[in-house]
Image (tube, rainbow, N blue to C red; front, side):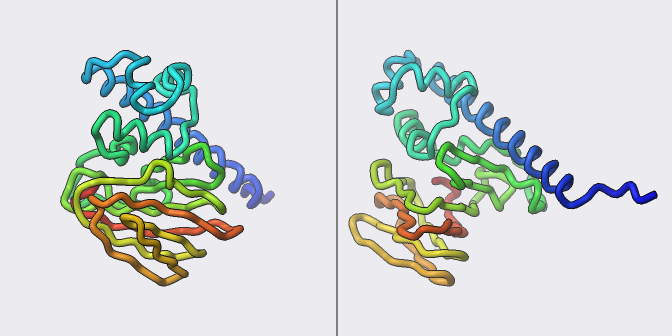
Length: 205
């Protein structure tokens, strides 16, 4: 008798595992926000005002019950003066292999917007991420700003990357290097997802 699971069962198990991993990441991010807020001596109302969100949403995030957008996480990171990459967590093991199915993953509220760490942590001299960016998404209202230099390459789809007010249209295979201390943001103008690989030194985004 053949007792091997069929492909649908395997896909279902993989999808459930991914959802559980995303839930754990959001819970950990919420706990970190709570810790950083308390360390800074801010009340929920104060931090919510600084990050331009409601106190109720911030409370949900801190309890791991919300699914914040990347824009929200960027605003929180700026208000708390930490890189948004801190919300990934991760260990400090040097030289670790990051298996494809074991990447630290942050899946936020926007459909198909997923960030995965390709390096084992964000505490060394170099950080790399893979980002899957949903059709029509952009973060113009909350651009990234962090010290260092960054290089991105589009591996699927098309992206508009704007650095300090100058827009660059990137197609599959195109790369762009820029000073990441300048405000920069992404827009996916297409009807399909885009994927980019980003490398940054020091590792911060």
